[in-house]
Image 1: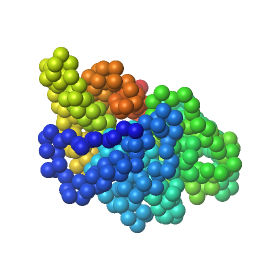
Image 2: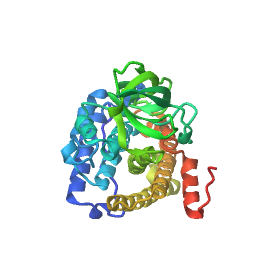
Image 3: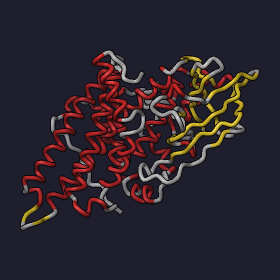
Image 4: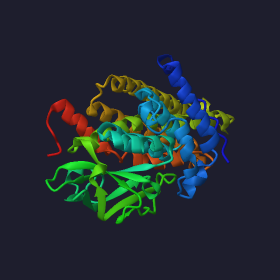
Length: 392
């Protein structure tokens, strides 16, 4: 069982920009991760099983909907607090962060923003504690980067609608109590619906064979003439802008989370470089190893500054989708490159589960693809700076 020795790295004194509350929230999450998650995460990844007993603990540290108002069970925190929580979770494992960010940004966020008062009171308090876990259904087998092409749809039937279709690559699906589903009505307009486990015709088969995000449960959502009460339709928003606004929130969390994965890889490589001796001295004394470490902490620091500023903009309500895309793309790419460099610094030991680097590298191969691929986010920036869409 690996001892978690991580302490944090702050080359540009970023802590000076944080409030005392920010630091308390971050430090409490870090302590919980070290005590409850780090000792078991390698076994969870090897066995390809999410440790569900962690769910109440995630609720207790405020990782589920931290920015949701207290009246609905949230902590009423700001966006930087949310980011710091995601950073500490992904510092341990991307799958752990995925569980929390899906719950917060893709399930609780749309219910809070677009749900009725009755829906908010029914779902949000139980989601905040982890008593209920949710999932988010947008991606389909044939429609990933083009979500507007979805074929999942519903027709009206009295006080209900009849839902048919399928969603794929859905984090939390195998054990989720509810699913926020995006589907087209008879007019072809996209709406959000809350589908509850136990509704006849609704199933959530687990997807097998993953080499990445192995400590996170991923599944499908299948709808075979599922009768959903009209009261479960989110009334506050229609159109593709609804799910895309949720993805903005989730991508913001990913931008912070990826820094956590990068920090963990850097931390391990730095410590290893002082302990591993070759040719009569620690490998930290060799120029090429110092080059790798110097470039790692430089890229991490740049990402920290970018993401903190984005957090300020999110707090002000002025952050754009394109700004969020830039941060998500940059930070995940940065983290993946650092994981690869750190793995090389450890040599053959870099592939062993005694160290977390190979697991981070495999996880980040998924993170760089999901919730907007690396290339799609590049084109979002291209559209923003040129005014010309490459998608059509």
